[in-house]
Image (cartoon, rainbow, N blue to C red; front, side, top):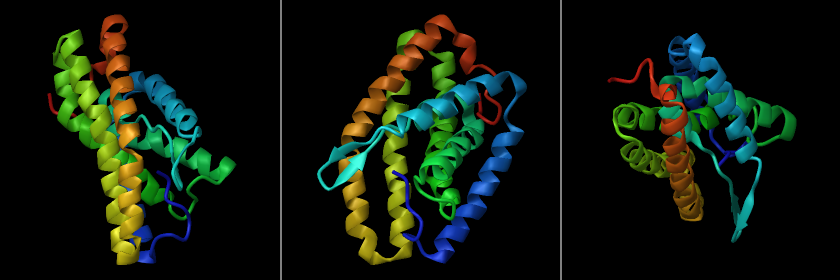
Length: 205
């Protein structure tokens, strides 16, 4: 799901960077001290999960887990995912530094949206209800991410539209897997550490 250096036009790269900076600023404002350990764990989860690429046809896919990050962290998912993307770009060359802002936006943006829309239901619901909403959130986050990637590619040029369609189709299995993993993770978390979903600053209750 990482967009590589040189794939996007300069206006898209600059616009993505500006929006990502805004998201990071908002995320840092809504990152309370008690959420920093969770942010570190979820940043590491994203870092490791997205290093494992599975070939599908001419492309490859990987897990992202940004839906879970959004449900737990709300706006703070932005800086958590940014750190993972930065480390991947520096150490492994995944994505790239010039498109770091766009990649942060297309992965962090859906996480925040899922958090804003579904975190209150996860927080207030029973263990089973929370897991169901989390399952929806996990799959929706990947669908939104592919949509954001498609928009970035389409704004660069119509010639990228076939690639955008391929990204969506290739990630349908990822949507299913992430939906199930997110639902299972929230089901367990609601049982052993329900306070993990409390104090989501920036998420309407």
